[in-house]
Length: 306
Image (cartoon, rainbow, N blue to C red; front, side, top):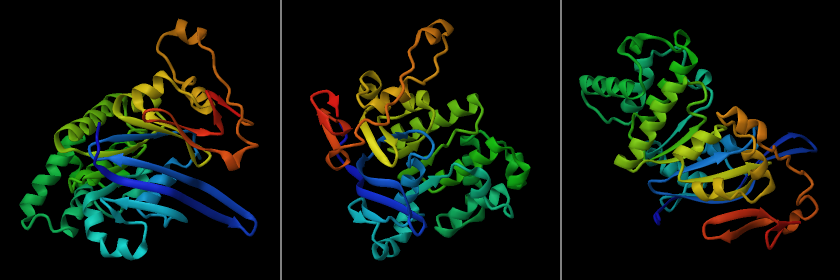
């Protein structure tokens, strides 16, 4: 069991005001830790707050409330963030879900991947930077012919791999991967996932892995958190969560996982989530530790939600 906390998220809130009387609670008072060398998965339906959580951690969105600690430093505090900006940018990176808008269309692939190396002044010689760029392209399965291509000359999957290469360019300690393989072919998905696992085992890479792909999350993640309406409703080690989902929403979500056997698929019973569960006891809802390391959100008595 890993014991060194790399990231601590405490009571994180991210609210967006759309109109005078309209407040969207995209992330609503969530807490979790990520340990060094761990891949923590975040799953849930679109709009549940997964991507907003990742963007709040890396300060793309200034949190409405709560605290975020990275290696004991309160990076959610604007003054601390500014003071530690170089340290944070060097050690924390994000892979964006939308590869089109995340890449500068006026820069070539080589310039995009090389830019962080120049800013951080990691290599004095141009030849050394170029060699690093070639190495990164090879890691994500792209040929050198793409070095002089612009993002609009690449397919969606190729652009996503450029984004992954850029995030890995500084050999960061912690990566927020927001749907990193969604636009990739199956063979390339396996290559990228195996790369993440290799970096985890060899370099101690720590990752927040945000995805809709429940089967892939089961393979790549050490622990998994399930988000619903801005809340983490269940959090446990991967094997435990998939073996014994407790929250009604988790059960409904996992019942939608596709299986390759047509006979098994026909016999499966789809579970429909009852939206009324816990709706009348919001003030009493919280995360309960129902077994070691297995947390469930709700108004919980015994093994029942009320």
